[in-house]
Image 1 (cartoon, rainbow, N blue to C red):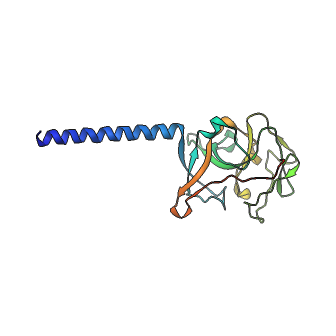
Image 2 (image 1 turned 180 degrees about the horizontal axis):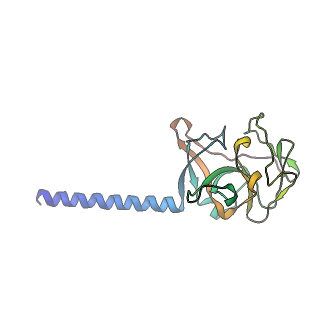
Image 3 (image 1 turned 135 degrees about the horizontal axis):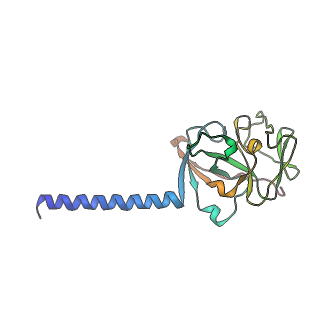
Length: 194
């Protein structure tokens, strides 16, 4: 074999390796995991703007979302995202199908019980929005009440109502950037019943 034949064979091997690697990445990205970047202050102090997280896209095909999980979802039209931006939000699930949710007395109430939220600083006011002002929200099948942890600066279900399961991209399960913040994301637990 001359030099050019060896070079050509090596080049073809490289192209084949890149094509296989890209195909594997594409399958994983489309069906299993997706990276997302946190934009804005709505999840402070638990997530900072600019952090990167991995979203698990397969879990909710096998089971229903659970209260306390952090999810990424397509923003509803009422959130008024700029057209064509593919706007996605990251929020915490507070209400699941069958729940009645109220926002009153500086707290979220689920099924008549005050939701304990130790992940929110005590000095953060929790005010109702247009969807929860002086009324409760009943969640029908496949409806979820979501909220940012930074309640004064979060556009969420208090303002525009419940989201549908079909809008949920997946469950946030790992923070991978910046290196100082690398950690698994554990769902919050609440006392039963709620």
